[in-house]
Structures are given as C-alpha cells and as structure tokens.
Length: 289
Image (cartoon, rainbow, N blue to C red; front, side, top):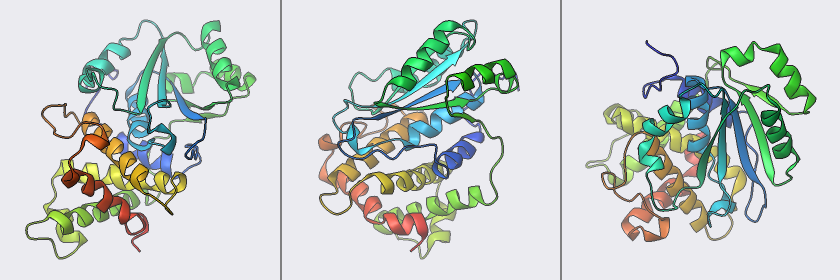
C-alpha cells in the first residue's frame, strides 16, 4: 500500500465516516439567522483524517451560509514533520485553485504537536468562542492510543469524538437506499427512456453517479433538520447546489471541465430545476415514503 499518509482517492472508509456523522449527534442543527458556525478540529494526519474531512465537506451546508459570511471550517492538527498539508492541497488542487468565493467550507492546517501549549491554547480559545460549534475528532491510531493526549483534552472539558473503523449494522444499506432513490428521482426526470423502478435505474448508473447520489441523499438528512420548508425553498435549493459543487470537486472534477461550478444564482433555469427536483422529493429520498 506504500506510505499510509498518502491520500488515496479510492479509500472506501469515506462512506463509514459519512454514515457515522449523519446518524449521530455529531453535527449541530443550525438554522437561518443563527450566529454560530461549525468548526471541526481533526487530530491526526492520516487517511482517517481525510475521510472525516470529506464527510464533513459533503454534508455541512447550512442555511446561514448563503452569504458566505459563515462557513464550516475544518482544521487539521498534526506534527510539524508531516507532509499532510501539501499532500492534501495537491490532492484537492481543484478546490484550492478556485478564485471565486463560491464554497461554504474552508480548511485550515495547524502543524503543531497536540501536547504543545499552542495547540491547547487554540483549542481552549475555540471552545470559549460562543459562536463556534466545536467538534474535536481523533483520527489517528497513534493519537487514539496516547493516553496523555486524552487526559489533556479532558482537562479542557472538550467532547472528543474518535474515528470508528467499520460500519454499523445495516449502515451502508441505508446510505445506498437513499442514493438509489436520488438516482431514481433524477432518472425519472432525465432518463431516456426513464427506468421502470429504482433497481433498474441503479443498475445502469455509473459508479461516479452512484457515489454522488449517496452523498446527495445523506446530506438531505441534515438539511431537513436545519431548513424551513414552509415558505420559499430557494435557500434549500441553493444549499443543494453548494453540496453538489463540493461533491464534484472532492471527486476530482475542476471548474471549466465540469460545468456549472458557480454561484447558484448564476445557473441557468434548466440547471436550477435539478436542485428543485431533488429537494422537492426529500421525504421520499430519506425514508422511501
């Protein structure tokens, strides 16, 4: 497998992190007008750290982020000697080379040992900031086994989440079912000819389309908790577009090759309706109802 610190686009553990985050209380519920924002601090430089980051970036598109004033921030903390930051930036060069401010997720890299005073000072400062919803994740086997680090984190009175390697019973089946329903909704609207049922549509979908559909379906779970569905649904459609942009960028597409990586309001009407179709079928996609 080579150096385990190198990033692997085919890492299957992405889906484990994705399911864990939506089916737990890890993600805060933030609604329109909420002054708070999500700050996820990931301890470690590893494939696990990348997987947690990917999951957060796919999911966390909140209603109070439409003006880009508040973004989900993902902070990596790792020893100075690691090359993780450069590896990560190179791997996701299509994200970091964007010149327009069209994303609502940002990354921060803090090369410092967890035991050092600076790391502890930063985490204490973040914890005391009432506008931050701080989540600390241990995403490295070496840190997970380091009792000294755990003791230090407990002294700061932080809730610390640990990476869990392995799916919960039935977890992937739930994710795939949601993805299948997303795919079927889209197929019914644009298939030529449309498929007769979910299974038929899923069988003929490409692997890339399946992965994108899984990300879409799972993100709708958090969106239902956070958005107002009683009035104008444009903010929900806009959030789905921001999720879609993030997903295709994480999957390796770049602006110019993948069309419509732009602000939602710059989309032609024929593209905006794609977000509407998915959001309007939210309950069916999540629960099959």
